[in-house]
Length: 335
Image (cartoon, rainbow, N blue to C red):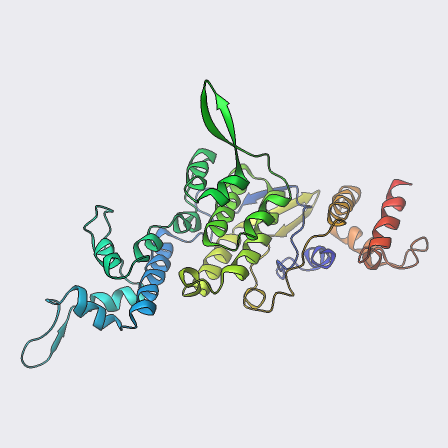
């Protein structure tokens, strides 16, 4: 984890999410009305449509024009001289148009789902609402979290008796909650992480936001081969990174860094980029937070971290790469 902290100090534009860190004090958006780079509804609608039609194509093994002939035969027909086509399904395949869906039971999405079960559930999944991120408060986020099944609700909520009725109350946030959601290795777990990241954005909690962002990357690694997400994995990563361009974290004083970006190579890699937390992680995080408070500027902190320290016998940055060094730095700071 520690080397990403050094990256934060040395280059604002080259942040990775290899190891999430807990040092950030606050967060703000570049533009409170509509942040630069915030993906539009059209962007997410396109991704949703691409996921839908690619999922259908994988099941049916049919081209867009073949699907057009199946579901809109009057628009895809031979008129005696040549094949006529409205190009409707070709536009779906391009993402330039979306299928009508009134969720009435007789829309095109419903009709297609009868032939290819699961396609409507994918098209209407909460993940697209979470990815779009146009949510106003925790109440909306809670309502969506409660749609994601028992595995998610068991992590995010606890039952509470109120006036003789059982209501679901959010569990207090802790460092392990995003990890539990990522470890579900499901589309629902990914959706919950996207929703919680949005909540952290709304309340301006940079610590929580950067923790969750790292777990979103890990969750995408876990679900990258699930058909519902594999067909649009690249588009989803690009969409999230567009959102992250709008964020800045304030560590205190003059230390300001850009939000981490999801790294495509890590998500499609062999998993080595996702370091699992061990029992020493909380100590490391506390030391990093304390160091940020001790130094008033990025340059001073960077010099201290990378300069040989006679008590430690090496630069503090090197010492903090192992358990013994972490303990030594802790004793040095407490002296």
